[in-house]
Length: 331
Image 1 (tube, helix red, strand yellow):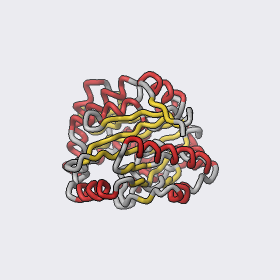
Image 2 (cartoon, rainbow, N blue to C red):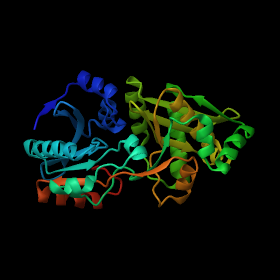
Image 3 (cartoon, rainbow, N blue to C red):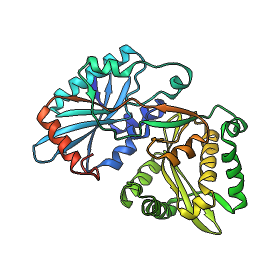
């Protein structure tokens, strides 16, 4: 199988032509470095991939991870990609390779896709037993008019969007200085809700790297001059991903979260995006799921995470380290 290494300029140009997920973008590689190295490759002249590689402590082996990097369109597509990845693992002498496949939203909305899991099993991939990225999400079709999008919402959500304005919520586009405000909001959510979130420097790296590629936009919510919420959106060629953000307790009480999301949806439609992924609707978070599903759209389940294992001892060590490290230091 034909695998070529891609230089920065070529990879960025391909990202603009192909609907590459933000987690596969050149900018995301900058976010994950130096903890990870990145091999950017092209399979069969048509499938660009970022393979993130990291050392497994204590044993001198490395493993690979492909986050949201493969869209399986048909059985031939699966065969070509998977065979190439197996060759890549052997060439790089990786212990194992983890894959969180991507989804073609257009196919999800309009037709049934390929049975990915059956195809992967043919090439000795197996379910890893973990899930790094959200497996369940809610996606809005932005080809609809604003009136249609509003009509798809629950009536309570439309009411709360209107009420947020009466509560004095104002939505603004953020600038570089507002990254500190964003981090304060994230910190408040972490303390109030007990969610597992990244350290402050992580969000600074995301903002900095994606701003350089025009791959992000941030909205802030103000009430009487005070910032009570913020959303950081990441973009692919066709899609918006609402990956980071939220509101503090005051913002939620004033319904700023409804106004923030609606403004983010409208903005995504204005700039020509086709789909809006609310990024995660896991059933264990019932309140959050109800909030997201209330905006309408389609519930989509991503394929499970799969792994190809070349070295069983390395993979076993990796799993042990994951069990004893709840903060996901090693992945």
